[in-house]
Length: 102
Image 1 (cartoon, rainbow, N blue to C red):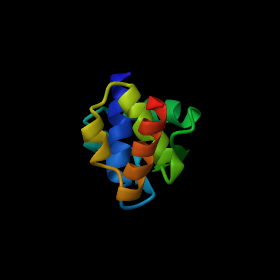
Image 2: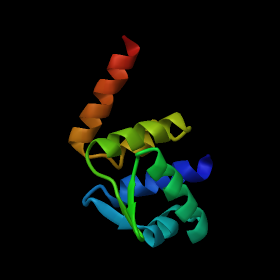
Image 3: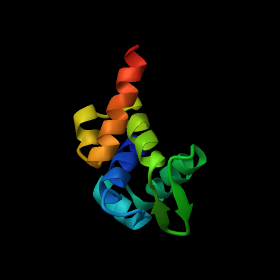
């Protein structure tokens, strides 16, 4: 879904320097209505890409790498997604890409 992809990208952007954001912040950043973001976050949580507690959305470590890969799989531009990764995360996702080419 396009909405899930945009919410994932916003989550990557908003959690780059910290582990959590809010559903409201995701709604503003992704320009998706609040209720729709809530539903998307619930789906993404069921996939293990984010952790949701109340209105807080957490995404750390390996979940960020998984979320980035999922966003690209959903049709997001790789360069756009990688913009919101730390250097270490970028190295990890690059390694996964090279492994997939083997």
